[in-house]
Length: 110
Length: 113
Image 1 (tube, each protein chain N blue to C red):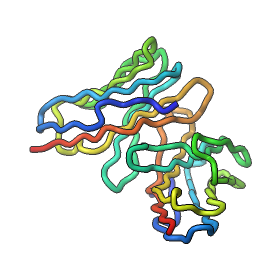
Image 2: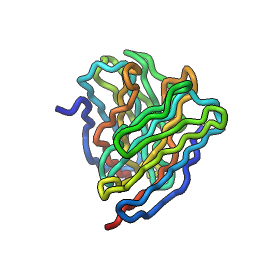
Image 3: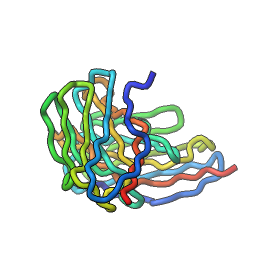
Image 4: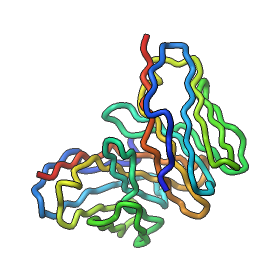
């Protein structure tokens, strides 16, 4: 049930944009996005629910295509603080738990 | 003011010994989870709990057991530790209301020698 994330890694210069994708073979109820800095715990960014709207948080936003069971995380005008590993977590209806992808390592350089 | 704490933070143990990791929350959340994190595998669900004495298996539950006798505590036990259980273990909590996001503990780095 583990979702597939792509790309595995990406390097950006400050101010550039990036897209991280997450896809599942299961019919999803929700998709979560988390960011983890090296040596720290994952931190919740946002959730997208089935039938819900695209979410946004400052320059980080996400979408959820229910027909394709895919979600994308959009990082615009990247900052050094955006560096870390991004995980999507997917939930099927009624499960009350998340399966996480293997992560996308994002590095932002000056 | 962390709402979730894990103990110990680091542990080295010998193969074949039992090990118990503790997760403690002060948020009164109903759901608690144990994940392990390994390079190339991301976060994998071991067990989870949806209430006191109510638990269920995740995708990598073999060799692990859990117990939840109080809302605030969720224990993970490695019944007989093996080197393949060397990993970083994260506990997470959720109330499945509001924004539904998980809050993770700081993790326990376990090394089995």
